[in-house]
Image 1 (cartoon, chains in turn cyan, blue):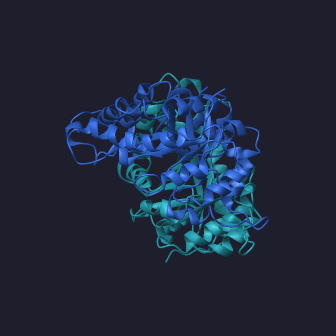
Image 2 (spheres, rainbow over the protein chains, first blue to last red):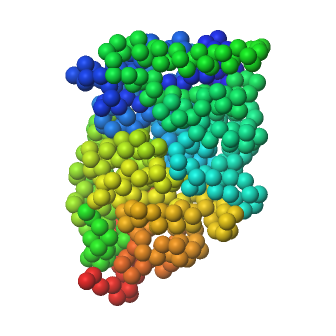
Image 3 (cartoon, one colour):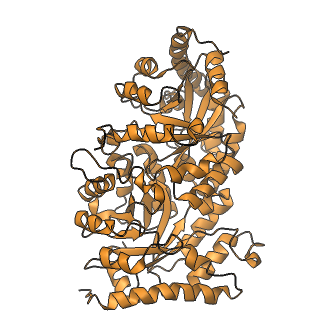
Length: 277
Length: 277
């Protein structure tokens, strides 16, 4: 398993919390790629080739593959196999259903596609995610406080019993459940003040952080409020690395965009006096 | 669009609220089907052939197709096309993500696969589901109170502001949003007492009701507490119709299982003095 110790080692070795979000949007991929029947993966492979020493994880956004039916799914599975083994492979599919159905989703992602981690909706409760936890070497990444504006609609509702936010209840319930050790949480960088709350509830868990880049979250503040003594952060950047500019030298520009994020992360990590025992 | 008036007409004409859940589990499909590369759809087509005059809707559970990768997705798309046009086609995929990602899911389900309705997680809030509402002739079916035990974990948490349950807030928010007319809600038959609450919040909306059959919900009580003056119910039965017994005459047994549910529904509908104006 790519466990928390393994991830911490990668963070220290690469001086990076960087996860690159692979959301291959055909309307943004350079036109020279579009003749191929495998344009989604061709472009993503170019990204991987030029960033795998800077990133500790890749997050594949399933909507951008599912959209193309069978061909999209073949490309998704092919791309998973292409990612170097030292990088965590996250399927960002945001699934969850009743038990017998979740078991089928788990079977697909953790057996056939064989990703390391899968994002999941918490709304239906603990039993809806239990079947995923039967794969003991896999990560369940549960939505807590998402990066979008609508997070205020339900995630930030205060609960009667203790006046805490719904997202804090999600953190607590899954922190205290039987498969807590397999769990990470999604916390958006667009809510920097809430990272303090989050770390009170789950000081030790890894957080997957979207919202940096196009969505405007503050990277330094995220690291200051979110990092813990064993790393604890996987920070996703999608569009800003995937589609950096309109220029022609794609490989160069993608690498430079990733490097800009990694360098800021590296400086922060250097200051932490991390030691991988 | 298969709008609420169209659905009401089908309910009255067929004397049925029945939705058949197509969850084609290869471990339960008769062995004679398993040689085919299209076993999932072959079996589901047998079900449809023998029930389409009794059912107003079919609900395709995506996990059972996704599990088989590209071949599963081809079968899903083929099966959607096979369903008679007077039946509502529901993709039970339980998707939802930030805006640009939800837009890709919407594009797949409402353009390429061209289903009539899609199930969605509410957790991320209104803006996460807005892109689906851009397809004005399609239904968004939002999880409110699900049929599983874990519904108590978050859906039944009481909210500080008004002591109402989280699921009631979900009903209110989407009832009052700009695309309310395209919305149905999932309410599980395993919580009969809560149907009264639900109908206080959303007297006019259609409810998709899982939990009858294998999960043990009470059909009569569901109809008594859930039906409204224009029908208002789509009641799903999955495994009890799909895999009725271990016998050999599959078509006969499937039809009989569906008929048993439809007859109970028909008697209830006869008593309502429904009139389709």
